[in-house]
Structures are given as C-alpha cells and as structure tokens.
Image 1: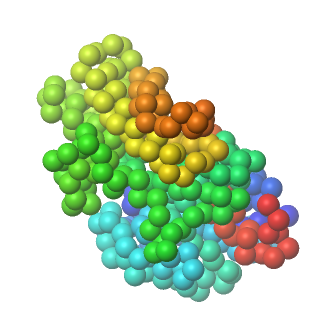
Image 2 (image 1 turned 180 degrees about the vertical axis):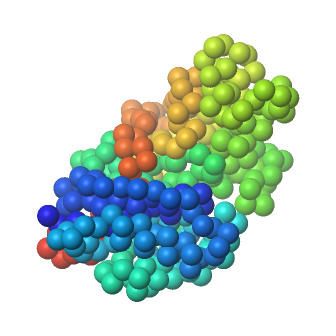
Image 3 (image 1 turned 90 degrees about the vertical axis):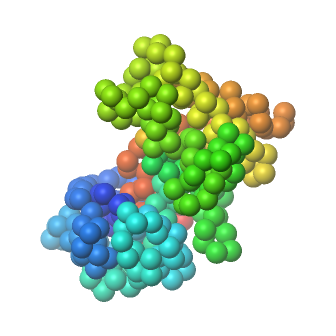
Length: 309
C-alpha cells in the first residue's frame, strides 16, 4: 500500500495521519502544539507524530503539511505568522521536516490544505472551481481551480478576514487594522458582541450563544444574524469577482446552526449578481479530516507515479 504522511499544524494542536493513495486515512493522532517551546520543538513534535504512526513494512514515501501562517509553497518557508506560534515566521518547514523524516515534504497554508482536501475527496470533489471560506477564530479563504490552489504573487491569497466591511467600520481587527471582516464575523467577535450586549455572566462560548439563538433568545439571534449577514455579503462580492462553481463555508462558526446559515445566505444572495445567485453556498463535508487529506494530496503530488488526480 502506498502511504504518505499528512500533518496539520495549528497554534494549539498538531494532527497527523497516514493516508493511502485513494484518500483513506489509515491512522491518525494529535498532540498539543508545544508553541511556547519554539519552532524546533514544533517540528520535532510533528516529525515524531508521523514516525509514531508508521509501521514496519509500511514506508511513508512523502509528507504533506498544512500549517498556520503565510506559507511559500515553493520554498516551504513560513513568511509570516501570528503570536499563536511564537517565532514561527522564517521557519523552514520543508527542510526541517525533511531532515527529520528523510522523505520529500510539501508545505502549504492550513486553509489551502483544507480547501484542497474538500476538492479532492469532499464536498467539492469533481468541481473544477471552488471557493472555500473558513470561519473560526479568524476568517481565511482559498480558491482551488482544477485541483490546484491559487496562491497569488506573494503566497498571501485568501485573507478573506482582512477585507473591509461597512459593518466593521471603526472596529479593531486582530491584525491591527480597522474595519475588517474578522472584527464582526469571526468567532471571537461574535462572542464579544454578545457579551457587550448582554454581559459576560453565564456565557461560556460561542456554542452557548448559538444554543441560545436556537431557543429564540432575541439578542443571541440578532448577534448571529448580523455577523452572518455581513459575512454573506462579503462572500457574495467574492463570487462576483471570482465566479466559482461552488462556495464552501467551514470552520467552527459554521457549526452555529440554522439561524447563522439562513442569515449567511440572505447576505450572500443580496450581494451576488443575478447570474451568480445560483452558485451553491454549502458546508464542507470532511470537518477535521479536510486539512489532513489536503496535506496528503500535496504529498502524493510529489510522487510522479501518483500525480494523476
């Protein structure tokens, strides 16, 4: 059996799997990210995970990585990153993991890997052009055309969360800018807005807000409706620009239920041009497996005999 390693590196967790050429995840495991110990400790943990998953007689032929941060897929280096991974910017992911594991390594951003996984074996399988928007702690995006990620001239394509929105005017974004989508539509922004309106007492997390919205609490419903409608308008504008066949929305915020989804679609259809309002807006299918399968696809593309998709 042909097996490749797949690694998903985030600020809090590193997940890894062994994946067959048909997309079957044979084994998987995750560990907390030793972010505070620095980049070399993170690389050690990722390499150890892959090595622990391997078995005698089942060689890992290549490894693919989806990582937080802006990644240059040509060099395998991290161009920039947030404080969630201190010192991560400048890390040679491809060289570091390749030296530790002794196999070819391919690297990309984690949202790009997520989109590639959905395009290969998920909700966008068989779709030529797909736009994916991942909504969680931040808001990222990725466009996949003919099974290939569009990276842009500076490997920075996909920063959906840092596009301006009128609804975010005057609000500070985590990037330091003002008026960006993340300031009103990302998970922390939604939770903060609910707490601003109702007070923090008794509010555990965004899932609690979503549950309250489903029970009909007016403030919870309004917060989710406002954030989702604004994001839907932004996605509609992206569809006007990119004209994909399909839009997928994934991430933790996409689990907020029918109130959020119905409002997202209201905003989307209000902004999309008439000829494009029929472009489907759907959830992803693969969940946490999507970035691992996308990373595996990157690894398989390093093997000439398996590059046919």
